[in-house]
Image (cartoon, rainbow, N blue to C red; front, side):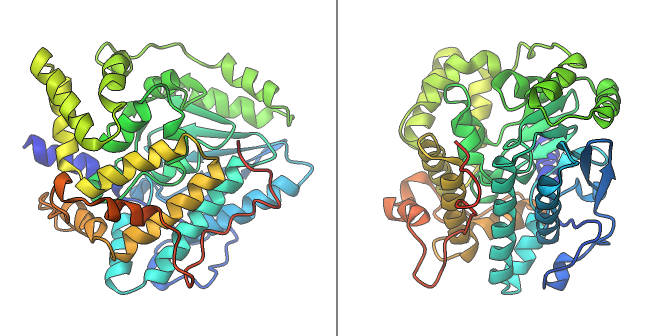
Length: 405
């Protein structure tokens, strides 16, 4: 029962995407992505000196799709150029901010042979994340509820992230045979110590308080006070980030992570996840579990053993490379990795992971390779190699926009 319950929670978090927006054009998108009314999925509120983008697909946990990211690009470009708009806010409707990508829809697209449309979705999403990361106006993301995968991608690169007591953050991609993407290799690699490796490999969740403690969030408040923040932001007439910062701080709450939080285990995380290979990380956790009989170590080992072995090795290298790369470099590299993952040339782990967890729900993915010792260096290397001559890299507007540091 516990296994089924955990799988259901992961399933709700991993389901995702499909969104569009007000005044939207569909930009030659395939019909199977247009499952919602384009006039309703992203709503816009105009305030005195700001605009709010509302992700409005609560039944799908406000997950992203290609039409939505295309629309967000248009909106944000327009707002950035408008002298009457000082800053931008993004929030989600319902119990989620944004749960990430609609991996079941992507799975179905790939089954139908729509690889090119799938690439276009990821390209569009990553481009918007780069725009957000280089945005010239202050950006406030209200992270109330589930914030996972692509949800972090459309919020963490911005100026301010307000977490609440209802926020749930995670990057659970290794559990479906994928890798932390949407800029995750950049922001995870910049977390304290080796916390990013821990989160990226295990897919473990963080609360709003923990996000604040590690720097993923810039402000924290209880959900009952969130409407006060929204009202205050709606009345602000400024483009000064220090004014917005102080305004958010007025309604902030102080809270410390629970005594069972991973934030109180940073020393153990660093001790185990600082190693160079996944095998060494697992060995360190096993030694720690044997020495202390710590239930936390045992649970972490269980999560690692449920993940795709190839995804674990690819994710670890990705986060390590992210420590020495700029945001745009991380996105370009992640796009290469994503193309490899969805093309199925190295492995079909992504399709198999989605099938096992979210489609058939048998919870028994048949990973290929089946274990860490069957993962060759060449397999991992292929994820990070330049794409073929006929396959262009992700084209980011780095010449027009100052690169994110």
